[in-house]
Length: 261
Ligand code: BTN
Image (cartoon, rainbow, N blue to C red; front, top):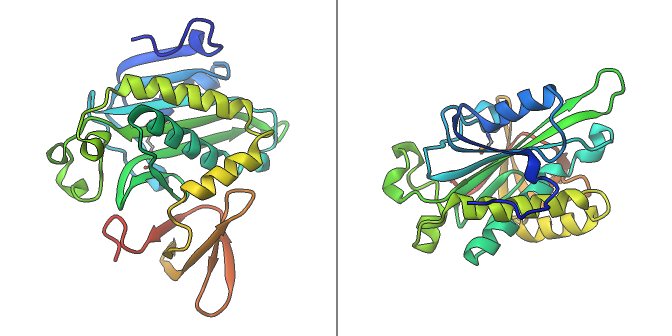
């Protein structure tokens, strides 16, 4: 299937693999070798799919979309704090265009339907030691497409979902890929000029807002309520003692989601 229409600026840089350990790892190697912005790596299967915080991302052959995109924005890393939010909005957009239902986003990098995880985003960034500017960014997105409940490993059953389990019909990962690349391209063109619109949309999609959350930092756990998302994509949390904190990264669990009660 042709994933990108003729003339699309990223068409020349599309790499489709049958199997790879991780499309993010593969894209990172390409970026180090000088691959241009708009290089997209898609694999039918990942044998070592990676998630945030050192976790793995279950990536069975033909069952999901596993995609990594290389960007080379000319800016300091601080200017990209909203990038994962932007990638989440693009992924939600692509899912909605493909199946007609929009997933929520659990701050900051999970796509969800109800209380179950549909997919995740792993953004990785490299900074030039000479200029202090961004050398390249990898946006990695994984979305479950064809799995039935029984296809998920036991430890994910009841916690994960796929476009199949949500809509009642299996979805071709390539159809979703085509929509996702289009959404990512639109997003990248307006990453800075449309930042405020992107964050407005993220706040609408973000299911974490208003919820009771647990903030995990090493061994410390704090419970609070998620109030808002700031202009850098940080999560403002209020604690029972009246204090507030902006969470920029790390682990945030929502009460009642993925088995956290
Ligand atoms: C998470 O759930 O914490 C993030 C999951 C990100 C998975 C995607 S699949 C494509 C890309 N390659 C990887 O190894 N990871 C990302």
